[in-house]
Image (cartoon, rainbow, N blue to C red; front, top):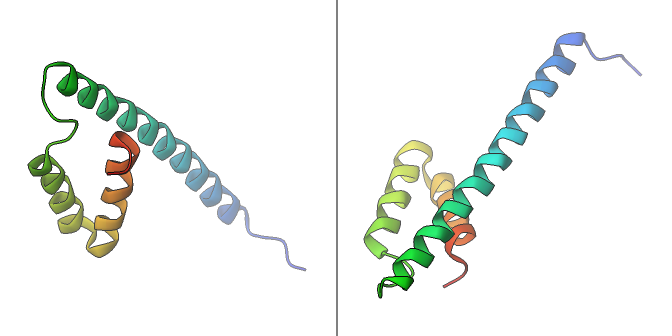
Length: 83
């Protein structure tokens, strides 16, 4: 069995730190989205705005392609719950 070069361990450590940041941002985004939905409902509006969701989907698709759409759908569901 071969030892891994130190730079692989360092790169993996950086990936782990990025993953933690992504998870923190995921939770922050979900919470903000839920608060927006609650505020909209409290003021007599709908829980979600389709045009806004379409903007988010388009932004992720233009940057990441079909995988971006899948990611955006997960983010949107995390913030508003399933439809």
